Amino acid sequence: MAIRINCQHASRLLSQREDESLPWNQRQRLRLHLMICDACTNVSRQFAALRLAMQRFRDVG
Amino acid sequence: MPTAPFDFTTLAEHRPYLLKIARIELRDEMLAEDLVSDALTQAFERREQFRGTSSLRTWLTSILKNRIIDLLRKQWREQPLEPADPDDDGAIDRIFDASGHYMHMPSDVRDPAELSQQDSFLAAVQGCVDRLPKRIGQVFVLREVFGSDTKELCKDLGLTSSNVWVQLYRARMMLRQCLERGGFGRTQPE
Image 1 (tube, rainbow over the protein chains, first blue to last red):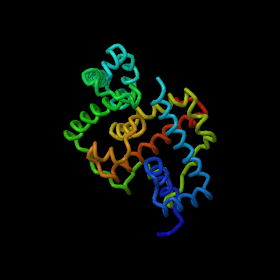
Image 2: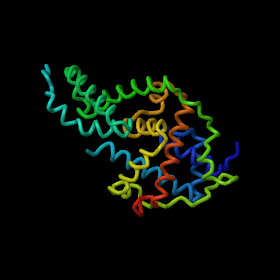
Image 3: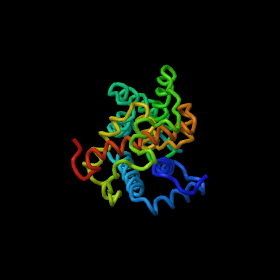
Image 4: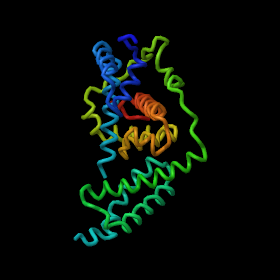
């Protein structure tokens, strides 16, 4: 499998990463992709904001 | 020897919280009220089993979660979920062009921690969760609010792990699209 991945593939890994730790090779692919891709870096921050907002929903009230 | 660690009044103080999380999971006021009442009754009957190692709210949430899972299993058995193909993400694939790049640049939220503290953002997220396809929303809320991990989701809901990943992936991608329509927290959602 090629080391280069596209944004669609990266988006799946970004979601999977929210649920379990990725296998080492996938983690490297994602890391390399994020280094060169602003779009996926933005999505990774969006996912973080989503996770934190849901945590706040869960913890407050 | 712990004697009755709490009375029913203490339990009832947690009712509004339990209703809040039951509502976002079930999207059905009557069902939410029923399951929360069941959970509180069950908790009171089993109050001697509360160990105090977790908070009372955590314990009550786990009892409610079991009731919810029982209900979902029954509902889903009656109307089974169509098996999702990991490569067939339909509407989500239309976010990407033929080479798998985003058609529109995703918004830069800059500081996720700061954004998540804004009440307007939290309200927008809640609104978008409510608009997810029902089952996708239910799996997502079990994961993010009730704290189920993917193994539990597979076991509790009788789904394969790839199915769980696809449901959670679809949930997150649909949520980010929904939030993009409101500027992802920078402007008020419609």
